[in-house]
Image (cartoon, rainbow, N blue to C red):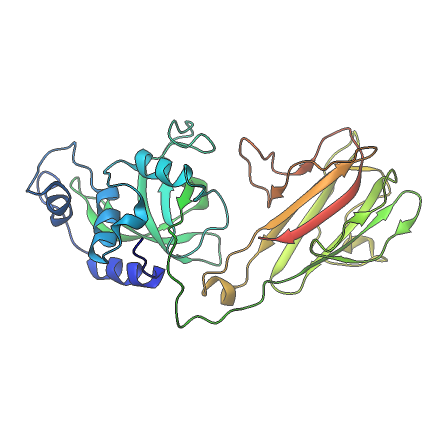
Length: 314
């Protein structure tokens, strides 16, 4: 398979910004795709633009399929385990949904209505994209857009070649500890080197910090409610740990990547899981507060106390 870097594709995309189609959706991208000039409302070209970029780079096989359909493109990557619903980064081929209908092509997400490519991940949680067949005109243009995460169904992640001018930066660590009903505060744990907790001893409080970036977290009390969000880390200051002495049955953790890492395309989420008391297994991993078929927005189950916690960044 031919490979190019993400930066190569983005450089090609940036040079096309401002190119507009004429009536009706007639453009060089469709001409290259279909082999001749075509015209008509059926010739939407957002996915065609993505194909054109990789074709220009001599790497169209990185897309696995030649298609003008967003659903077909998404499914090609999903079938190869290269469709992601979190942890987006520059170079990702991003698919959007304009409704909350479920996708028939990629069952883990929403409909796939439009496609572009992520240029930058912004500090406020939005994404700068470059898209074809977008803008205010009916025929579409190549335009830089700012998109909210709420309209992103997921991304296709090509197997890009490694960039020769990037510097490897160590992933931040998550350091955490828990207070249990019987033993009180237990020693710190870093990432997945161990778990925080004791079997059959319910967790009643949690403290979490990171070595870079920021994190907030909160706990849900058994048969109770969500307590307030915490951003500090302490075992003595009640405003800097989550918990009030009542058994905990669920937890939320949300990580914000700092700008210097974002600018290098390193975007992380909190990845965490818990185990219910008297069980030998964990619930599935939760990423930040994402909601999908496999994630509820939190780790745990209401009404069931937890005794073990694991957290890392991914």
